[in-house]
Length: 240
Image 1 (cartoon, one colour):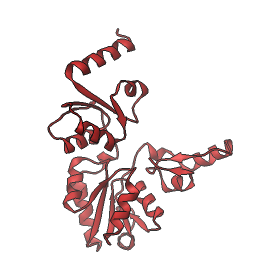
Image 2: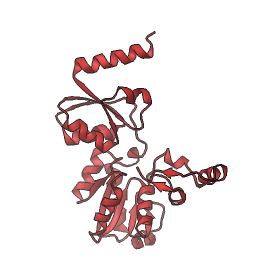
Image 3: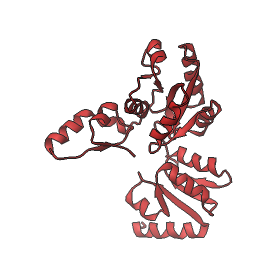
Image 4: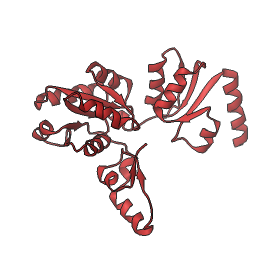
């Protein structure tokens, strides 16, 4: 049975023989990051891969990340793991987007400005673009949100309700969640959020913050904006 060192050697040789670029998301294990030519967040890696002179890209990440490379450089061949699923991205597709737009109009929302988080598939991004919307990352979400506010329309944020709610709170705006809040609440909200979420970040609760603050009184707590608003508002830092 080959050792870890044998496998690493084989991977390095294959990358050389195939003239391939290996990129790995920050979320990957250390042994994968060690072998990668580049590491970064999803958008950063998509840019690096699309601008590379390599035509074969091995992307250690989830499906929507590989799609982002193809969107920026459709001529490149992108290889991804078979099990490359982002639970949040799978919570919305073009059908659910169309259904959401139908509900918004049914509730009296005639004009809206859609923002889709990069954690969504290509067909959803295409739908948003067709409706004159934009794509954001967790890193540039605040900047994109400020741009959206200048459009003087209700914001429809998808698919992550938590990121949408946290951005609304950050700007002193009222938010509502499609499928949870009433039609009247949707109509009166400044920001309407799709009812999607990150299954991992949902595990972090306010009780966790309270527990660690009690155990380590001088602790500083940093969280991702995909966490629940109660978690984000009680942390010391929020960002990506």
